[in-house]
Length: 389
Ligand code: NZQ
Ligand code: ZN
Image (cartoon, rainbow, N blue to C red; front, side, top):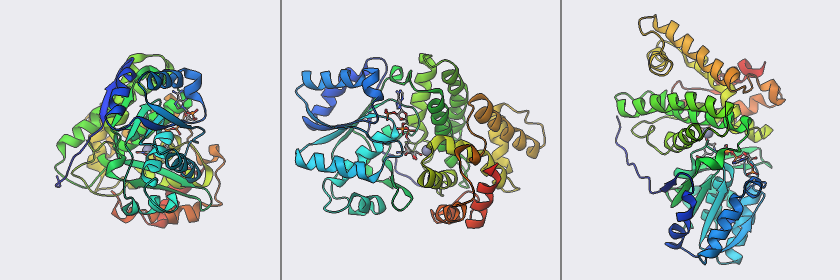
């Protein structure tokens, strides 16, 4: 295990009705916030009314930014930044999924920067200050509610870039599983695949001696497999939604990834799919992951696949290790493509060979020479091609 610092300053308010305590947390920092949300699901669900009533009752003023799109665009960041500056706001409160939260984080970082918001996405060292961020999570997937990452798209240049800043970690996040009852089967499936991918990205790693991280990872993967399917089949299963929600936060808050180094492969490859075709992030990961598994399985990696097969899928440990690895990959495919009905091929999104070369080059340049199995452009292209269908 390598040296690491673990810092998770986000206060989590978890459970039914937990939002009631949010104003107290906001008032520790400010009484004027930018209230951000997406295409309107929070209004239909009554979450918007609940939150705005609480803000009013507690004397917290707010200005709204609505319409933040899935795969949030840099233009939305610019709009929110202007609202914060023009109204002298002291914090950002995001109601929604990863897209709304990520956009809000970069708004919070752009307010104190005198230039284009895209500059700070490309180079977070330019961030001078970050307004306090608060979130009310409505979709279990990205873990943005408890980490310092944000992912923003620039469709002018077909770029989708991740940016990290320690102060992007929210001050407080509300996790009420009931708020996710209305999440569609498609988003539930995609979210589950995203959570699992966050775990895979650090589980399949070359650093040795990380038993704590690996055991937590295997446990969280089992949680996703059991509860992802339950929530997909029965959207109002509170226990399934609650477990999925907490798993989403823990999968990517550092708990499973600290003490390890290396690059994330499937995320680098998926971000290109979203950048060129604006597809749903978790679904894209689901399509790529089994193909990546098959590509990286070799004598160096087979023992980790054996652990995955035995500890997560309960495959008989006395079998040959390659047999276990291949069975584990088959079980993963069955879960993602049959149980969760996610797309098996890129064709299902309307993706053909047109941009695969440039996408492969851009993905490889996201540090994939440091990945679990180092990947060059030709490797990424081969993985994309194997998913084409
Ligand atoms: O826009 P609204 O109306 O809110 O509808 C959303 C949106 O259409 C809907 N939705 C959200 N909560 C709902 C709901 N519909 C019904 N009931 C609810 N309770 O779901 C749709 C997708 O929402 P979005 O926020 O885009 O989904 P997600 O949470 O999966 O976020 C995806 C974005 O996060 C990035 C992805 O790349 C993508 O841009 N990621 C962020 C990460 C991070 N910050 O750490 C890590 C991830 O790997 C990921 O890259
Ligand atoms: Zn992800």
